[in-house]
Length: 205
Image (cartoon, rainbow, N blue to C red; front, side, top):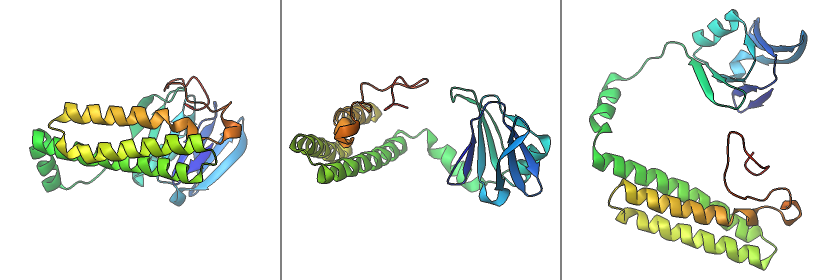
């Protein structure tokens, strides 16, 4: 079990999550392993064979806390959520612009710009902290390439052009990613392609 921010991740096979007064309690083989006040939680995510009491499920729904069920590999299975209220005027506005190519392009451009700026800051920080000149040069060059891509985003005429810019930037970012890892740990954490479900190496994990 692990709590990150206000989300509780239950990953232990055979764990039993149930309600005890105003707390969520986790038992494994009839032994208490964890107890968390409900007011500390915003959501609960369960991996694989985790059992849940009906009382806990009802309480989470009543308090608007999401319950997400994933299989052992982390693939989404289901979500339990209580009643939600929404802004109908906002929903109508979202539906009106959902099919507009100009809106989609501007929104995608802003999202990709934010992503690339964040990635560039990581590379620049790595370059400042690098002790090896080769690492420093590789990180600085990748950061400069991402900066150029951000400057090119306003000139992308459609979503396909944006996807191309984003893909090229991702390629450059991950090509320099190993230089962010401490030299003494690179033998164990080397990025050799991106894989998931299951990840094939420690870096992807």
